[in-house]
Length: 261
Ligand code: HPA
Image (cartoon, rainbow, N blue to C red; front, side, top):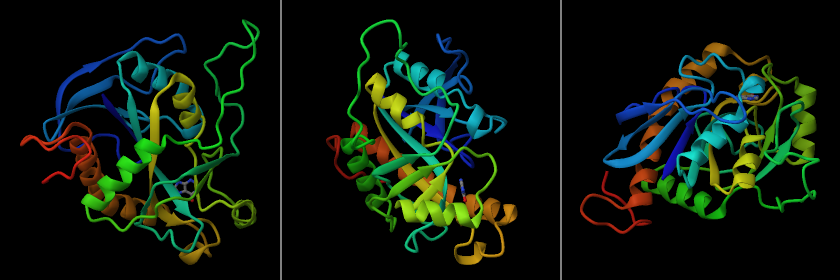
């Protein structure tokens, strides 16, 4: 089953025909909310709002372990995260979407493992390519089917937040090779890998990062809100294509094929 983790601007999924909600208890505490089960254009999906359905949980306090564990416990196999970012690379203009292929983790103090160290041999999981390539390809095909002009790669710098960055911090991230900056990419992506979920992210650029483009004088909260309003409708359309491509459409298109939406 396909799960969608919605970030800022996507606390509910319009067009999702909800069948039921389920509160999941986990060994790691409470997820951000009940899982919402439903159908997107007749295709089954599970939805979870990362910041809670009232958008009350800041990025550094999200219980990433409980969220990922809950999805896994409900037999989810594939996860797409929708995550807002600031654009660092000149090609990642506000309003554009991207499917990152690399991550740099600048966060601290977040619970980032399921493994209980001290209870068995220490293992080191390969993480050279942090996203599931099959899921990235499916996301890119969905973006193409939805007519989006997206960035087919890029390095997502995950910062601690919840504050935005200084210009000097963005300069450093750029020197490090980051193309975009957001607050929720990690440890979510790693936990998905650790538990065996095929996970990729669709990054939604909602502003120029600090000191770039029209953010040279500062980043306006209203500007981000306006951009969120404009772009999330398009993201929903992409997700509908993604669900359709995952399961095949009603007239029998095989999974992976284009869908007539
Ligand atoms: N910085 C960090 N996270 C973000 C930004 C940003 O500029 N925009 C959206 N999420």
